[in-house]
Image (cartoon, rainbow, N blue to C red):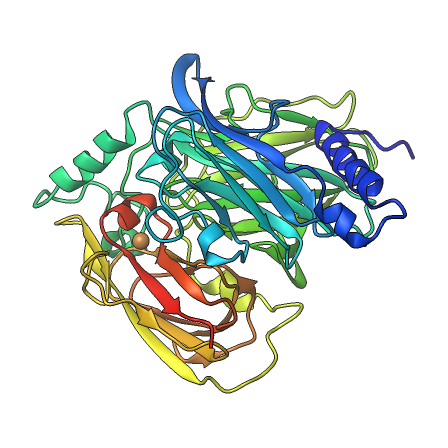
Length: 471
Ligand SMILES: [Cu+2]
C-alpha cells in the first residue's frame, strides 16, 4: 500500500537521516556532537477569520514550528530571541537539569532581545510534548510549538499527524487579564448560562475568546490532511490553549487512546476524549477502506465553540463544519482520568513524604493561590532527593485547575480517597471541590515550578516551587 508522505514525515526522515549520518559506525559520543537545532523566537502575522493579527512563533531556519527529534539523540538546541522583548522557553514535559527548564527567574534569567541560550541534555522518554514561553502572558500570543520525540525502535506503520490547539483573542493578553481583574465584585457572566445544574455552581471559561485555532486555522478554512484509505493515523493532540479545555470528538468515529502527556496508557477505545490545558493525547485512528473525511474536532468545555482539522482520503468530499457544535461539550471532570491505567506504572512503594496543597482563590476578586498564598508570598514545597512523594491537591474553588509539576513525571494514584494505578503525566486536572493525589520520585534536584496551567490563574498567583538539592 502506498504510504503518503506528509511534510512531518519528511521532517522525521530528515531528523532520522541526520542521526544516521552522525552515528554511522562512530561511537555514541559522535551523535552527541551533532550540531544543535536552532530555534528562533520571533513574530509572524496570522490571519484569523480574515483579520490579521501579530503573534509569536518558535521556528527552525526552514520555517518549521517547534522540533521533531529522536530519543536516541540528546536535546541540543540553540534558542535565539528575535521577538523584541525578554523571553524564555519551557520544554513542557521534559525532565532537564533545572537550569535548562526555561522558567524566568527560577531556572535562568529571561533572555533579552537579541540574546541566545544553549540547551544540551539527554532525553529520558519519547512522546508528544510541547514548548512554550513561561514569561508573562506571551503564551496567549501563540509563543508555543510542538516538541515531538520519536522512539527509533518503535514500528512506524502509522501516519503521524500533529494537532495543536489554541484559544485566540484580537485584544492583548494584558487587556484580557485587566478585564478579569476588573470584574471584581461583578456578578459572574460565565456561570449559570444554561448548561444544566453543574453550570449553576461551577465556573468555566473565564475568558471569552474570539476564535479557537487548530494548527493556526479555524473551521472557516481548516487544515485538510491527506490520509490513506484503510491506513492508521497516530494523532498527537496538544492543548496549547492558555485558558480553555476541550472535548475531542471524531464525528462519531472511534479512536484508541494510547498515551497521555506523552506517556503510554493501557489502550482505551472511545469517541470523546477530554483534554485539559497543557495536556496531550495520542490517538490511533484506523481509517475506513473507502473514501472518507474524518473531522477531528475540539469542542470547548461547557460550550458549543469548536475548532478542528479534517483527515481526508484522496477524492473524499470534505464537508464544511460550523464554528459551533450542535450541542455543548460537557465540563471536564475526573471520570475519564479515573478510567486511565498507566502502561508502565511507578514501581509500588510507600510514600516517604505526603505534601498537601489546597487550590485556593476566586473569580471575585480574581486572585488564585496555593494554600492561600500567591506566588512570591508562598513558602514553597520541600522534599529530599530520593524520596517517593505523594502530592495531595484539594480544590477548594469552583473552577477546575490543570496542575503542572516541572522537571518530573508523576502518576495519578487517587481521586478523592479512591486509589488506582492511573496515568503517568505531567499535568492533571483537579475538578472543583475534589482531591487528586499524584505520586512521583524526587530524582531531579533543583528549583522547580508547580502551578496551575490556566495562564491567567498562574499570572494571578497560582504557583509555587518544589525545591531540593542533591543529597
Ligand atoms: Cu487554575
